[in-house]
Image (cartoon, rainbow, N blue to C red; front, side):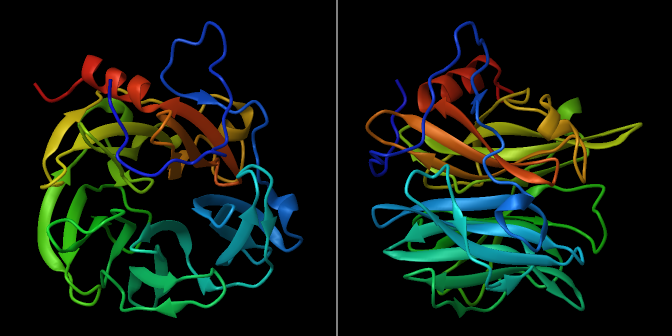
Length: 316
């Protein structure tokens, strides 16, 4: 049995696997959990991230407003399903991730500059006051995702170099920093392999440390005659050298099937951005953007996901 190496989350959101379901990941029956109706000025709310905070949860949320500009706001919840979002914009940009490292919360997001998209980095202790640090990649990159602890004394970030447009390609790399100021020591991690992800891949939620390695959910993109289709895959990376892929599923774990995933501002999108995990039970709750319109929730366990990866392993 695989084991999560982390904290217990007693109040992790959870719904049991439906009877007869043969897939390793299943959807919350109350999806979507956040829609444009959660904020009056929102055109859409999606691709957002959450962490345990205090006796509940805090989050950072992508809100595209009614001018279609990209904004990031904060929010709080007692159960990680029902959210109160703040109207105040903390940063401009999109697709935030958040993780805790040594009792501080680090936000990464796609920062908008006149030279292209960079990876913005900011830190907070209370989700009220934020200190913006140097951009981690300049330019051009997306999908900057920090590991939840230092590895060999360094901060480590997954990132996808790209172009200034809607990139029709992309591989995942790792970059490292001793001080969150200067980044380097780049290593290739992985690129597209199978049809469902053949256009590009990008990091998803903060990796989950397990005794098998870093369990890493990511998105893969297929280009069809109707455009892009985004789905979720999974891999296991080496704990000490996380640019080494130990195991990787050859097929997606979750793809657009439900109406809120197939119909929206950008149809056919499942875009994972956050995962809560409970070390005691092995439960994992995954937050994902649905059709670039709303936030949805899915569930799995570390055992089910690791088993699926091993049974469909690309790494022979």
